[in-house]
Amino acid sequence: MHRANSSVTLFNEHFNSKNHKMTFISILEDNLFQREALESYLNATGRYKILSSSSSYKEFVAEKIEIQPDFILLDVHLEDALGIDLIRNIKQTYDSSNIIIVTGDTNKELLLKAMENGACAFIYKPFSMTELEKTIDQINLTGSFLEPQVLTKLLGLINEKKKVDRMVFNDVLTTREEQILELITKGNKYKDIAKLLNISFHTVNFHLKNVYQKTNVNSKAELVAKYFNLK
Image (cartoon, rainbow, N blue to C red; front, top):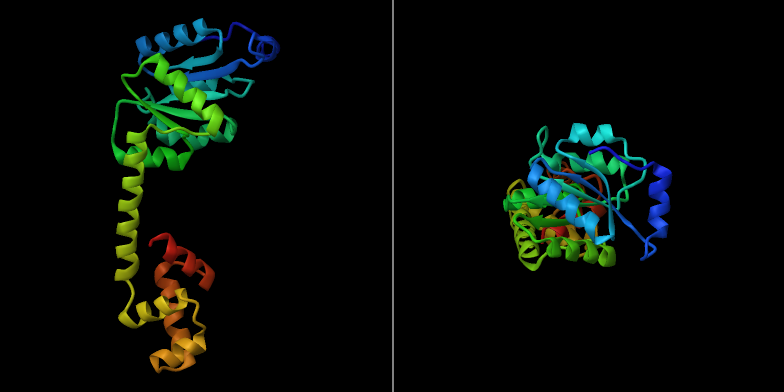
């Protein structure tokens, strides 16, 4: 889709609409029917201005949009890339844009990766335009929005990931290292740990260095933070 208006005209529209705030939107969607339906509906409301409408990331980049979109509707499966892998690149150029993932794929790993990469919402196909507007309005109010069933999936996956990470975290430590770690997280000092375990201060230090190496941390504070993050 080619931009019919100059950036100056778009800027004026941003402030001169009847609501004093036109919402600028870019669409990345490889399904032509879906893309055109989104364009027609959003333009017809009078609330939104379509800055670009692309079937691929290459086409989106070629648009060279001069005004930051308020929202980017990003399909997961584009012609030339996986949408979630593009989020970080898009955010480098349009850092304040809210990215809404549009997909029919309910894979939980996909959901988590998209949110980690910087997406602020998911909307699953098929969806109504009312659902889309509701999502946009909620993001304007709160900064992000997830339907309850999506949030449940996300939290479930995060807990599963923590469980796996916790098992790996514990499996690499010896029994003595686990004892020292437990005492460290309870606020005990090295000399206190030595006394409680009936070992020398130097032995405590030796084991703790091994714990640092095995858990890939560089300080006691980082170790404690990682430990409690996996609880």
